[in-house]
Length: 305
Figure 1 (cartoon, rainbow, N blue to C red):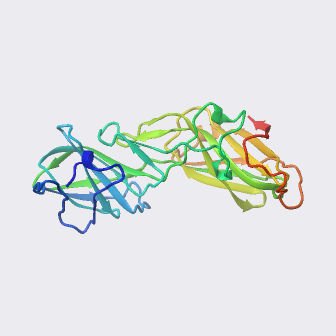
Figure 2 (tube, rainbow, N blue to C red; figure 1 turned 180 degrees about the vertical axis):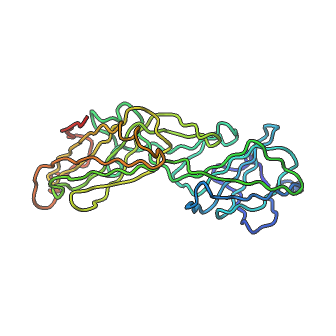
């Protein structure tokens, strides 16, 4: 077995759940004597289907944690030195999520990389007057399930029950009744007032960021999108719709959706529906001669309060 401090950032220890006991070691160190069976139960997230789970055990001595990555969702058996540990677990199939301070039980956190406000449109940067001038822009995270235990006693044959829960809320956005949607070459949107990161041990969120989102056409002048976030971090939330018209003009429409979000009965599954704008009527194909995907020339034409 390799303690976490000796593992390169992108490396993991992978063991199948069918193994009765296994370890990887250096310098001919014998395998730890304690056999810990992890039973991962999903009553808090019955539909969860992660490709694998990471289990980190933190010794009371404050040494670096032991990390095990087990395939599937059912847990397995791992080997540890005798002693008392704290433990965190999270799904390890999150390619879009980054981690910090994994050597510290209380500080271990998940976050995402910086992003462009207009990234779904293939545009870098931002534009004057956007909400992103006042807060960072971050990529939306993958769905995450986590579990934690303050006390794990590693004895010769111990069993621990792990019950992960979902910690990333899902936000659904819908723009209805858009007039002249055929005038647009491309649509995307963003939502502000979202958490930048979350601590795995206690789900404490921090930061205040804006996340861009892709939109798809749902018919009858309706565009919609959905994404995960680390949580709702503030009291003020602006939803912005970005439209590139076929003649190359670029429009921004802003909606204050603070009340919709704060009054949602289910803060883990939030639905936002707003009436879309009336776009200028433009016929024909996109004018490639005037189409310019840069940050200049944006017009904030309407703000809905």
